[in-house]
Image (cartoon, rainbow, N blue to C red; front, side, top):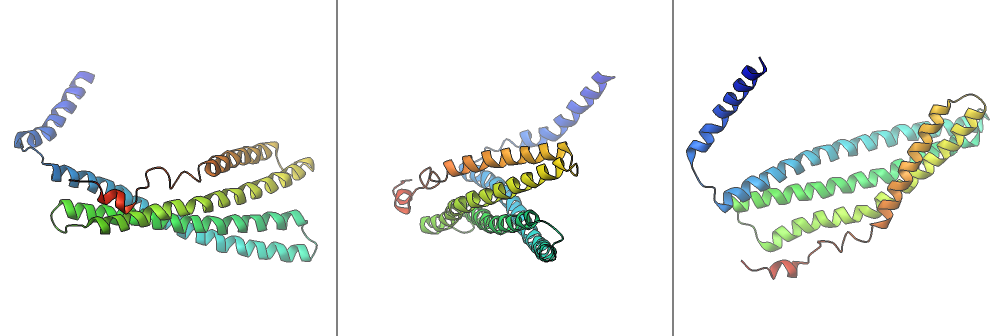
Amino acid sequence: MIGRILGAALAALGGIVAPVAAQDTPANNNQIAVLMIVDYGRSYGYQTMIARIQLETDRAELERDRVVLAQKEELFRNQRIPQVEVDIARLKDEWNRRQLVVSEKSLAYVSAEYEAMIQLARHFGGGQPATAEMLYATFRRGWDAGCDKGPDEVAAMKARMDFLAKSLERARQLHAQQNESYASVLEKETQLKIATADYGNRAAGIEKCRIVLFPSLSDILAIKP
């Protein structure tokens, strides 16, 4: 039974592959370049969509948590919640605002890379020749956006660490009062450990962005055909 299924599957694959092989048309370098660039472009196009979704998500969460912060500040003024609850809400607001900046720059980065892929595909496809200066300007816009968001990512992760640390402090208080489970405390401890490691790695690599594979326009113009 399995043999018959495998045989049928192989026959089906053969039927798909055979017409392509039967053409016997050698691919030229421009065709290969266009295919590769289009493939990269599809990936960046998808990343651009995801970056837009993330940006809108961050904006919505910022607005939501600002309302929560205002509510908690009012509750604290009426002595209905402790100060730590307001502190947590303020730290969450800070994290949200930092993350929104990161999302804006991430969208700028992938959008520039997507535009560069389109220019390259048109160039190799013969539709619209590109100049070195034009391509470099497009790529440079993406590289700069990618590097510029590095410090913002570090700042956002630091804000997230502060929020998680305060949330863990509150969770331990509530657990001591038997109002929060130990599993919840453990989960917050794990989140803080992950955020701390993330912050350390981002901070350590922040100066490398403009050093590694960041050529100048003169470097590009010096490359000969």
